[in-house]
Image 1 (cartoon, helix red, strand yellow):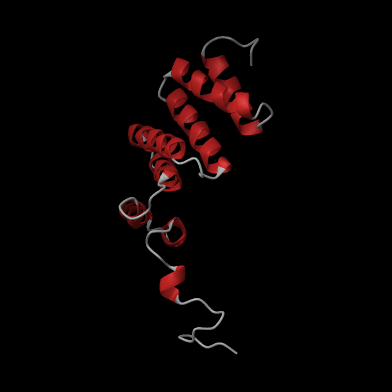
Image 2 (tube, rainbow, N blue to C red):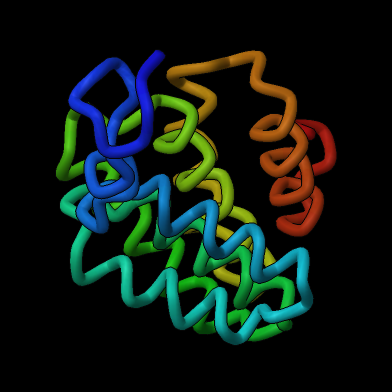
Length: 151
């Protein structure tokens, strides 16, 4: 039986909780959000940006926190950064890449940037034509653009 500190099958904490990996930052932020410490969660996610190479998921979570706090302009910039980071790293999880595009499209729509939002969601739907969340957001954009037939 392996014990903590042995070189057996149980990994050391320093190997599992490496600050250059995204998971510890996400787990910490999730715990802090559940504890009502959203400001601290935001600070820690931002700190993670300095240590994690592919930052797309961190930017995505930062954008969600800003959006929930009704700071739409900051959310928009975080979602733009999430999309940019996802495009810079081809190994980004496809779900994260798609979610970043959807959230950027949603933020653009909410701030009235309808043409840009439409273009963003068209990219998602071109790759995944039956994605329900993307289709819903796209329909909302078309309705906002007074094009109900396309919705």
